[in-house]
Amino acid sequence: MSAISSGIGAATPTVDPSNTGFNSLTADDFLTLLIAQLQNQDPTEPVDNAEILNQLATMQGLTSNIELSDTLKQVATSLENSETDFGQKLSVGASYIGQSVTLDDSTVGVVDRAFIAGGETFVGINGADIPISRVVAVNSSQSYVGELVAAKIGNGETELGTVRGVVNHDGKDFLVFETIADSGEVKTSEIDANSISNVLSLQDVEGKQVKAVTDNGQVLSGTAIAAATNGTRPNILVQGISVGLDRVVGVDLN
Picture (cartoon, rainbow, N blue to C red):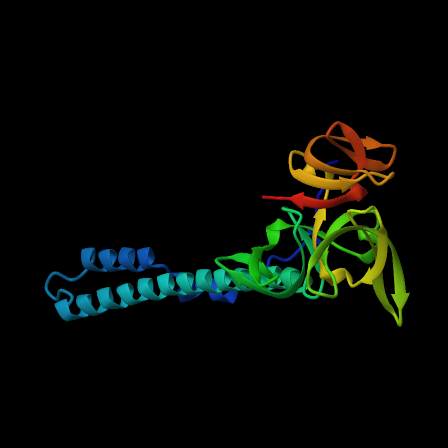
């Protein structure tokens, strides 16, 4: 016995009213109808030229309206995508405002603005407009601990020193900033993280003219010709003597 499907429960196809009847006709359909009308007209009573021109004008108007509608849809979609992309890029830039960041050249600064130009996101740092692609890190207070940094101190001058820790006063973090005088004297002060202008790594000082003070107070000046790490402490060689990166008191970055 063969099985017979009753079709009960089968999905009922839906019909879009906008694509039925005259709504489904295209410019090609109108042209086909017009040609058929001319081919089957009564030779004794041909279609009036004015009527033919009127039908052609109607067909042309239909084609133009369809093309215009398609164009407007494409423009609307493009604008919607552009607005979404613009909003996302601006949102990312705005999230950096007020944050201390490090750039790809070790420059550190606080972002004070964000904007879009030429489809690219920019942030304002230290008075300059910087592509956001150059931001390599968002700095927290703890991220500076152990780093050799350049910072503006109370008198407005920039000094090199090492961040030794973080203290908090009334809910605000301050960095414990250690500097070394040529005499070997160590001074400690507290600075705002926003006063830091550079974070220097071994790669930044290697090959540069540096001035450093060894742990026993010997002052060295010369080119950092090699870099190494002694345990967890980064070291450089100056005049053939190994000295900790945290003992560098001057670097010519030019």
